[in-house]
Amino acid sequence: MNLSLFNLPEVREFLKANQHESPEKLAIKFHGKTGFPLADVLLQLSLAAKAEEKLPTWKACGCVFTRQALEQATSETLAIWKAQTFQPAAYVDLTAGLGVDAWAMSRHLLSSKVVVFERDEARAKMLEWNFKQLGIACEVHQQEATMANIDGWPENALIYIDPDRRVSGQRSLSVKDWSPDLSIWIPEILSRNRQLLIKFSPMIDITWIEHNFPGRKQVYVLGKEREVKEVLVHFEGSFADVNSTYLPKTAVIFQKGETYYWSNNAGDEKQVPLAEPITEQWLFDPHGALIKAGLTSEVAAHYQLSRLSKNNPYLLGNAFVDNFPGRQFKILSVMEFKPELLKSYLKSKDIRGAGVGCRDFPETAEKLKQRFKLGESHSHYLAFTKTFSGKLITIHGQTEN
Image 1 (cartoon, one colour):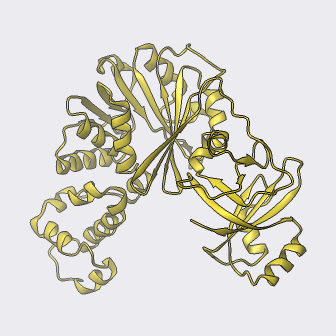
Image 2: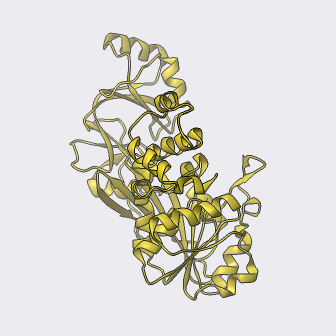
Image 3: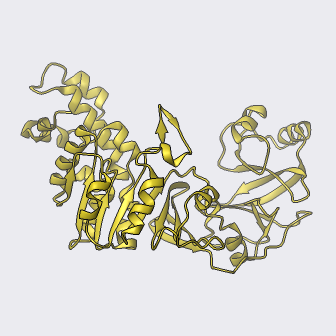
């Protein structure tokens, strides 16, 4: 990417004047009529539009992006939360990427030293260029971080790693295959009295983290609107400081401008009643961040709800719950899962579309939608699941929120 192109006054004016226009229409309108590479500028215009919700400050400051960097970047909301939550004396990012987390640390911790490493030369230059537009001071190193300079990092620094989990284009679950190699970095960092924050894919299994990473740690599952966005593991203390009986977990949900927290407590295992037969009138589907963090029982106990089975995240109750962290549906029917029975039921109710959810069920939602020829609907919801006795059932619910 030719970054100097975006310093040209005519390019900056073009981007500002056409920020709400269609790049496709602009390509036709201005073909052969500009003194700059139109395709490169229109690509940035397109990426800036995509960044508007995720990175509004970056867009407003005229930052530039690549497709991959923008897709992989954290959002401003999550980055600011990390800065405000951990408040380190200094921050070192081993895998800077687009640099959104470093930006948040620098912006909200003005007295802190912020150091970032980025091995890719083009990305490192983009980092420096964007940081200049944002008006922040970060120390950018265009290299892969090594153990040789770890002792030169600030005391009590928070070290942040978002490891590359791909090997030859395929995701690997072996930490030794990741870059950087966490099996080496974790003990080295913690032995030097540094804090460590590791970002994992939202698809990661928390149990796998618990079994593969010894040491005193806390897990944070971050959700925004209806999606799980990130899983973070915060390490403190010695690498050998292991407490295998209790893993603190917190789900943080950013929804409609509010932030909601749910956590587990040591030695406080919630006892939640199981429902069979189902007599309750409402079905509850907790937010994915709560399910990922294994906090479904905490939610059930708080709202006095029951479960279908110990490991089934669907919950049941007899009344609508204000501000429930997830979705809730008025139950219209509960039936044993039999394909022909369900087809007959859908036909009798003239249901041609429905939201479909599967919890503890042998088929996927997509396959079930194809199998029963279901279109989209915001009114109906079909929950395919299993009771604690092992019976497969379908619950037809009506959307209430």
